[in-house]
Image (tube, rainbow, N blue to C red; front, side):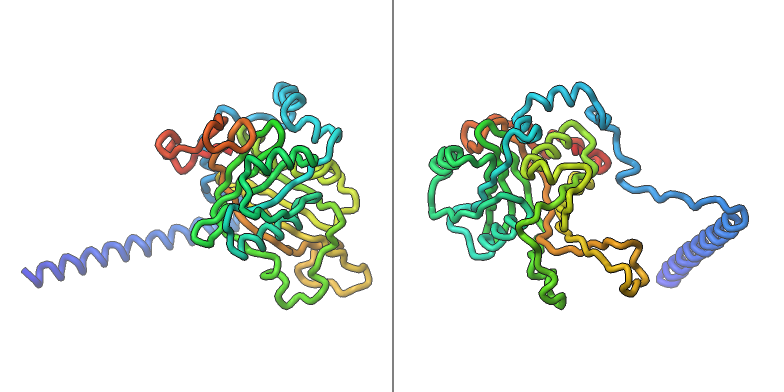
Amino acid sequence: MRDIKETTKHHERHVKQLVRVKKGKDQRKRRLERKKTGLPGGIPQTLETLRVPDETTFEKEDVDIATEEDADEFSRIYSGEIEPKILITYSDRACAKTMGFCKELTRIFPNSTFIPRYHKALKKVIPKAIEKGYTAFIIVNEDAKKINSIVLSFMPQGPTLTFRISNIKCSRQFRKNKGKDAYLEEDVTPQLLTTRFSTRLGRRVDRCLGALFPSDSRRQVPLGHNRVVLFHNQRDFIFCRHYRYIHRDGDGPVKQNDRGAVLTDEVGPRFTLKLKSIQRDTFDTKFGQFEWLRKRQDMNTSRRSFVL
């Protein structure tokens, strides 16, 4: 019986090897035919190309959406009537790493201020922030001395967004072996870029992120920016990147990978966000009404369906 089992396994391995060899020959044959005919190669299938269509997907120039946005909570900011002013703080009893990340966020968001918490309740902090003219506040939360979420709340009408945060990389990790030229001009307004927010919910998140930046950052034609902040949506993960522009002199040497006179260099911080919930009003853990809430049991289990 043992000899029979070994013979059977050897035969199965031999059959699999023949299948692999035949598959390789067919691939090489198709590759040669494609080179002779000059036809382009096949486009690989990804989760983005196989994405399940969403009913709320909209066109860039949708009149109905534009009319709604003219009367929403951010209309005064986008019209330039008021400039955003952001308060950045952390959860109670946070570690030094969390406090350092809060200071890093002030590099990304213009006109933002980092204020230590000092064990104060948020119900007391919010009214004072509204009196001082703050339009939004950001709370960095941690668990077991590890940053795990960010709460973004707009004042005085809301909404409040909660994100899960991961893959954090601070600015000092980008400055290794770069010298003093890696530091930024903090007083220069960065350019804001948001990409691939295609649904109504995605547009809502896109507009919330844009309300954190002044009108000069949101202009389609940049006004002498020396750095750019990018929020890129891919598979419901929002990747935040912070770059600076490097202007290469025309008389200098041209490197092999240089494709123009302006290059980009990532300076950080870098992190990834994933939306957990949206509340209608300002931050309220007890009586807040949810505009959208991610529930695993209610959402489609398909890997090809995305909400943003």
